[in-house]
Length: 190
Length: 232
Image 1 (cartoon, rainbow over the protein chains, first blue to last red):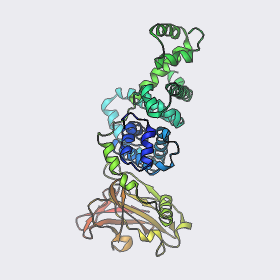
Image 2 (image 1 turned 30 degrees about the vertical axis):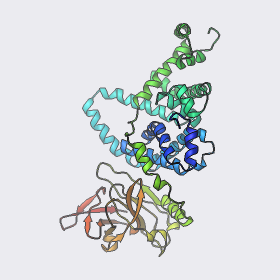
Image 3 (image 1 turned 60 degrees about the vertical axis):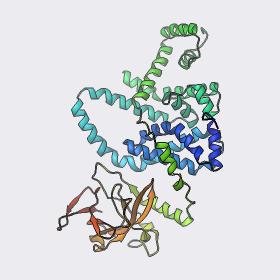
Image 4 (image 1 turned 180 degrees about the vertical axis):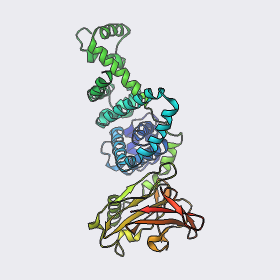
């Protein structure tokens, strides 16, 4: 099987018991899942644990995936849910201590230069919070394009969705983000 | 292009749908149209924000290690009793992550109506569990009449047994149960502990007594080592 076969081809093979096909899916989406995991965790180790948990959960539930061609958005949904669970159960308990200590030191060391970083971090948080509001069908191609740098053509092969349909989805994602972030951006400009 | 709205022009420009000539026309249009400029500005800002928040890349062997974990993922579906047990644990457990190397053990609330009088009855899920502590300790609980079911957690891949002992059980080690979580062996268990301040240690392989490395408060045990302090 060619390595650029659609996700659905691999997902069906996994459903038929071919474990090796799952590795290809992990390699394709580890970046996207890591990105999401990073938003809910405090460090690379925790992000990796969460990312691995997402893939293992997907593997366990692969038989629940009714349309294997939609593997990416299905996986995205799992990643969101696991991330939210993680945030609810763990992050809030620990974030204030470890993070504030590290940041406090950093601020003292770097002085004014820290302001830009804080603003950038805040903007990033706002953006990821807004992304959280998008349906997986829109968020998945958006992230594959903007974070993974995939062309529409490459995305089309993977997701088995036409280029024009993907452009529409990314455009809608962009519009929705614009709406969600408008108040924040207006505040920033004022 | 004259008849297109700013949103469409900017989208086509961003998506690379335009010929060279159309790109030039689009740029003129965008320059003259405040709304189109605003849309393009948002695009640039969003791209920058996404780039600035880039997460660390997964390790090169991440996929291989994840596939190795699939054996665990293929474990048979849990029985109804196991599910009830998991449900109970989920209900009463609050996980706490380490803060540097120090941290924890605390917890819990009153869920007395689930706990039964003065701790678990023989054969209940709580009485079956043991405990130990270390990298990811947690504490637990249901309380009633001054007793709190407290979860002890200790991560150790090499131990043959782990137990917890403290003044709440006359320093008699209570064994913890091993569970494999993300490839690590996590020893855990629920222990009924009276409200108040207590000291405890973990016992590895029945002979080596160790201080809970994540306990936020520790104090000398009088024998040259330290006890972890638990306040309920």
